[in-house]
Image 1 (tube, helix red, strand yellow):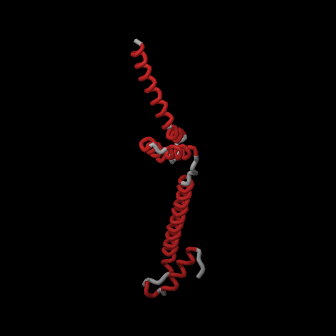
Image 2 (image 1 turned 120 degrees about the vertical axis):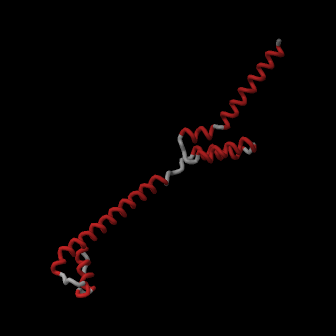
Image 3 (image 1 turned 180 degrees about the horizontal axis):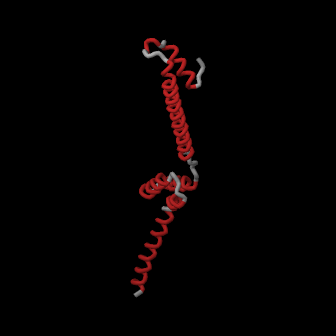
Length: 137
């Protein structure tokens, strides 16, 4: 009777110690997962390396990495890129509007212009287009 009770106790103690060991072993991974850190995958790999190689330095490195907050450089850079795209789109729209204004000004000036393009010097048409865009002649 005592041998059966000791066998059950031994199996229960073995399961309990194994569970405790695995929970302690996965501590860095759980810490990184709860805070949703960027380095979660690296911490998980270090935990697996420590488990299978029995090199405890990997576990310590994973624990330290799970505790460190690496700054998020991606979000500000995405914001800057989005702002630059908006600025570029706005400037290209301004350029299109200026081209349309020049064309409308040339069309309104067309009754005063000579019939043939060869009669109109190239420099003068370039100067008219520059003036329409707001540039200096």
